[in-house]
Amino acid sequence: MRSTMMDVPLSLNHLLDRAGHIFGGGTIVSRLPDKTLRRHSYAEYHRRTRALAAALASLGLKKGERVATLCWNHHAHLEAYFGIPAAGGVMHTLNLRLAPAEIGWIAADAKDRFLIVDDILLPLYRQFAELHRFERVIVFPFSGAPVPEGFDDYEQLLADADADGFVYPPHDENDPVAMCYTSGTTGRPKGVAYSHRSTILHTLVGCLADFWGLKGTDVLMPVTPMFHANCWGVPYAAVMMGVKLVFPGPHLHPDDLLDLMQQEPPTLSLGVPTIWLGLIQAYERSLAEQPGRWKMPQGMRSLVGGAAVPESLIRAFDRHGVWLLQGWGMTETSPLATVSYPRAELGAVSADERYRRAAMAGVPVPLVDVRIRADDGSDAPLDGKTMGEIQVRGPFITGSYHEVPVSDDKFTRDGWLRTGDVATMDELAFVRITDRTKDLIKSGGEWISSVDLENALMAHPAVAEAAVIAIPDEKWSERPLACVAFKPGQAADAAALSAHLLEHSFAKWQLPDRYEIIDAVPRTSTGKFWKLKLRERFPK
Image 1: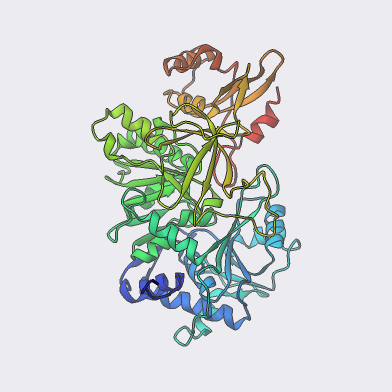
Image 2: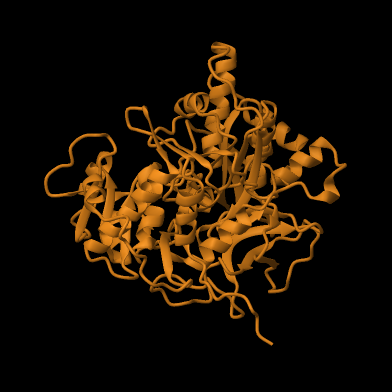
């Protein structure tokens, strides 16, 4: 017997047309470089996006060719998310926080044909322009200034294009639509290509109630960069649901975000932990120094990922009516793989247990299989204690990298992605990240989790940030060193910090041998703590 269902390919074009035809009155807000707000309706967005597709086709873009973006979060970048694949191309988001030489290398490796760039980022483009020659450089006049000679004007291309007469080129649901490169912290970055099918399935799973829980009445503020793992896939979901979007543009300082939240209060936001750490510190400081300056949007949910979320940060936001929803994933997983949500079995647990669970990576989302592989190659028991590498597979998990041979260090023989993250899993399938494989500390034959130490240190009232690294030790092989940044006007000595850790159930042998006081923990281009820089600074 055969299915009687229509054989219609999954397609981003369907989401684009749905937004224009069903949610035309919805709103997209972009904060411009001068901090004014520009508004578009979804009907305008639909027309402009189709015009972008028509313009790219008229420039000769062929199926499967890459169009790079070097842009902040705003409406035109969202147009690229759908307009480039609508023309048959593949959107390749370039990370504007990388060094120019690395951006140029990535663009060359991807063989990007065209580039769409914000005018305010042209100085950055010029720093790597000689490393990869784009056939066309299309400048989006984000600041409103005239586009310099020698470049294509984004707005003029759209004005000249035939949006109404444009016909989507034929495509298969497995055709690529977007590409992101990994962070490359342990080697050259590698490209991950997403398809219509993988992106649609990821979007549908993310919108389920226990995960993003996106509703048509939501106001969504994506602080996560749109070049970071497709902004976690949330822009696709927003367009599918016709959700009001509020893009912060280049203004990501905590004060700027809090100001924007007063103008356009979000019900759902997303960003990495360091963003929210700075935001809550600024907010609580204002309560003491300038009461009434800001109001925290009551009932706002915030998706937080990209690094482990300290329990203290979840508690801090909850005190002000905002709940942080932690997820785990990576560029290779599209990126949503697990989310920590309140399972029915936990309905009667204490507040402390609720916070403890919220600080975990969470439960695997539908369509994603997760296993924890111990050092001996066996599956770790679901006891919440036995550590092993997280391995994943599923329809929106990558099975290879762009033009890189499949290797055993990245993929198992039976087809699972090796993530390099170390974790435990308990009887309720809650995953708890304990470290990256390269960040675990092995002291006297016993493992110490740097993440656990960091989260406990950041629960100390005087500590703003903390990162823990391993340093060589003749007797124990490795010992932990804690790098601590204090809140303004506060401090604590090593004895007080160690006493605090003992109160958090660490054994004496697990405590750091040294504490180094620093101004701030260095960060990677995506806002994660950059321990490599600390290892270089404190080699022993």
